[in-house]
Image 1 (cartoon, protein in one colour):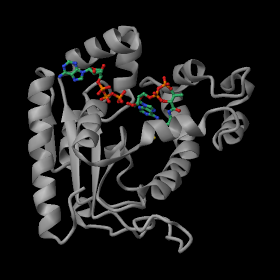
Image 2 (cartoon, helix red, strand yellow; image 1 turned 120 degrees about the vertical axis):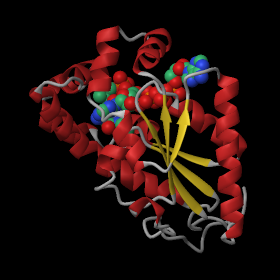
Image 3 (cartoon, protein in one colour; image 1 turned 90 degrees about the horizontal axis):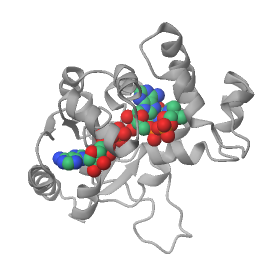
Length: 236
Ligand SMILES: CC(C)(COP(=O)(O)OP(=O)(O)OC[C@H]1O[C@@H](n2cnc3c(N)ncnc32)[C@H](O)[C@@H]1O)[C@@H](O)C(=O)NCCC(=O)NCCS
Ligand SMILES: Nc1ncnc2c1ncn2[C@@H]1O[C@H](COP(=O)(O)OP(=O)(O)OP(=O)(O)O)[C@@H](O)[C@H]1O
């Protein structure tokens, strides 16, 4: 299966002899994908993995950087969606764009496809640049299951984080200030848990407290390290 074919850096930027860092340009020892529906707890898992020593490539953060004033995605988005898409300061008008792309209507679906087609290739290029340095590299990708056929990386493992829909809505309302309608519109714009589980080989449930979640993440990390060391990679 695609996810289990290790890609040892075919997509990483080539190294340069000018760098003082001997790891610069080094391919990941193991590339892992991390996904989960909105509000399931993916970022919380990513933060725990970072604490344990993983290098995280955060696709939401890259996407945010590309849509700041002067970001590479701004001009093509203005061209596709018109001036409404851009705020007065030159950044993406996030609430306006969100209102155009999140939901199950055909218009939302079409707009989402147009926006993804602009942003995703730029995100992949930046992710490839962030890979250099070796170790266990975790690509934190909200839409990994949806883009698996088109993303230019293969993953040794794919982890999905799961929580019941009601709990996810509750978390999003409490911590992101979303209305229930907004939270459900985002959920309707993503694939479901069953599809995410099919594309993953590791499922982390997050329907209890943070102590239970961290325990599950620590176990997964320990397995990844053991496997990585067995393959001649090193633990970071
Ligand atoms: C629509 C935008 C402007 C809304 O911005 P906002 O600040 O409200 O949300 P943010 O970017 O922080 O995303 C929060 C979550 O929304 C969900 N989400 C974001 N984009 C999408 C999308 N295209 N399809 C489905 N869900 C999405 C993800 O779960 C993500 O973690 C923004 O999400 C965006 O530019 N999306 C397109 C780029 C994309 O696909 N990003 C996901 C990672 S590459
Ligand atoms: N087990 C838990 N107990 C209590 N709060 C939690 C738990 N897991 C996550 N949370 C909280 O729920 C909120 C959503 O979690 P998180 O940001 O990790 O979701 P996410 O899946 O990354 O969402 P997104 O797709 O938007 O990035 C956060 O405020 C987080 O602190």
